[in-house]
Figure 1 (cartoon, helix red, strand yellow):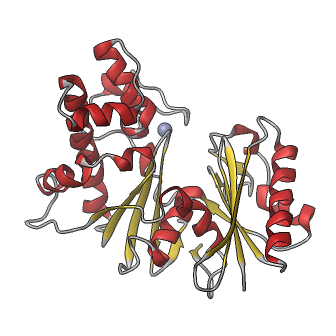
Figure 2 (tube, rainbow, N blue to C red):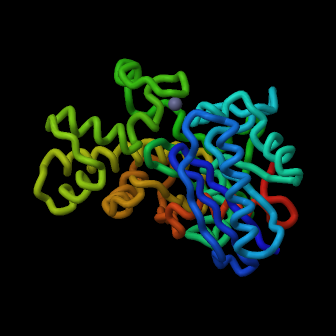
Length: 306
Ligand SMILES: [Zn+2]
């Protein structure tokens, strides 16, 4: 069986076809139609037909999307691509394409991909997060996504940032309606804004990380050190609560090498245990993990714990 995965992002829609052995047979990406729900669905349908044309077969289709489906209304919510919110995205796609489609949150897809044959392949309980322009998380147990009763399993990025006071959090409103979410401290735009506040120059995160690594910019170095401290504050809560077998990081922030050398020691100082040997690993498939995980939503027997 060939599985198609779709990763519906705010700026691009990516598609791939995975063969039984996990090899990517085809990959395409198109720009996401901005602000139009109908055009977004049409773009997804066109991509599926294009991939099926390329591989010459009818395939299963799984889709990873931002946000989640409300168990109360059955409709989409919490997506930063706000044109999806309030719609039955998977249901509408199924009607439009007249076939069964499976969907999951994009960070859950990353976690599933990495648990299946990525950085967490040897682990039973995988906690995976994407820290990029936003912050999403997913939990996979025995290669099944833990969706959760309220369908927010793993949404660590929208907890209040540990170690901050109310005033600090009030100063950082989040698009989700709360203040001072972890995302507002750890995601790329938050870090770039913090550097700008100190230096009055805008550098992309990649450059800030490079300047820190080369030890040519004390502000950059201090910011990366602060990032490691904050990441440890935030991940210590996950370790104390879930105690996963592995923590997998994806997204632009996950490319910062210092995270892997410094953060484990900082987490060890913060948790309720005399040992901390949990591996913290970069996502094996990088940006492709979302689309691979979406394809893996068609697993055996079911790839999610509902
Ligand atoms: Zn939030």
